[in-house]
Image 1 (cartoon, rainbow, N blue to C red):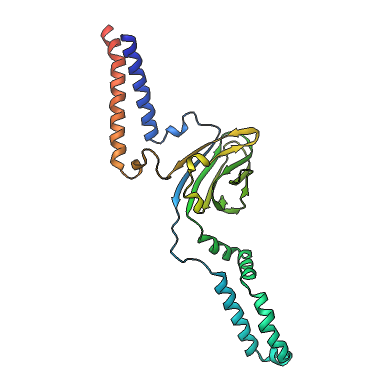
Image 2 (image 1 turned 180 degrees about the vertical axis):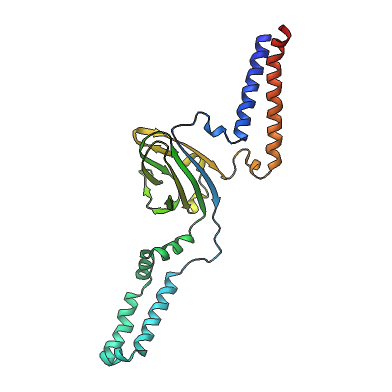
Length: 254
């Protein structure tokens, strides 16, 4: 009976100690792999109707150019009336159509960013760090539209399974990257805890820690701060009880 009492007390003490480490923020270091990502997920709210309509932009530009053709004296003196008519009715509509304007807008980085903002629904921000030398480090992220690494915009790639991936390349010992990703509608229905993966060359799997994602067990602890103290107090009580149960037999013998 004493053996089982000691074993149960030891298990309770160990579990309570690990629980307190987790609540204090140190639990993430327990048995942590060499490659790890710590990410925070947040909703990206956009005002209704925000963005640029390529159709309206194309129509506005075509009207403005047609008006300049009418107002510019040098053009009117250079071109004949029939040529002016063909420019307004044939040339301008072909140059300033929706497809052409949308392509030009996407070619301008500042305008392209504004167009993409209307599709953003979530952001993922955090760090990826390594305690060993790694090659071909990559982070998969469903629904990713835009990514930044250490403040610089980088291109996203598509994996063989159709997932978007952020390639970080080689990482040295102790190196870390600050990453930010913007996700579209598909990320709202995805279980990021299961679909976000971190890996490197030779099949090495890293660990991904997510904060702020929805519908996880115990998520209310983020909002109810008193619940953390309550759980911490319970764990501390269990820890003291377990230690007392382990120490009392030895104290009685002495």
